[in-house]
Image (cartoon, rainbow, N blue to C red; front, side):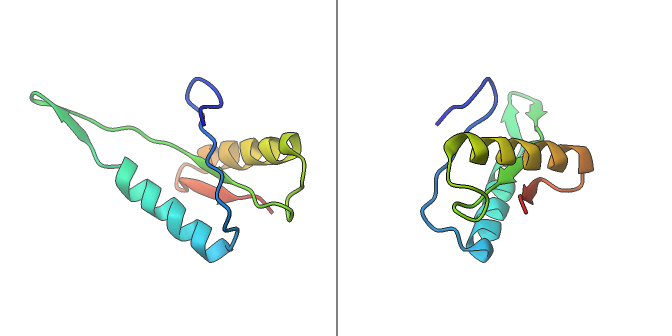
Length: 86
């Protein structure tokens, strides 16, 4: 679901942390592939904030806020494309 101009929400029923890390790594591997148009290659960066209910909260606003915090922290770290909220 689109949450903002360049933010999306993905709801996954499995909240096993190992599975979420694998899924985030799959997104990273797929989305980091450059796109070629003509003779020009385009690539972009992205950041993922991961939360788990009920561990991080049970209300949508709380979960979205914690996901935002984790995402922006991942952006600041630059070497991490995703971060799991603790």
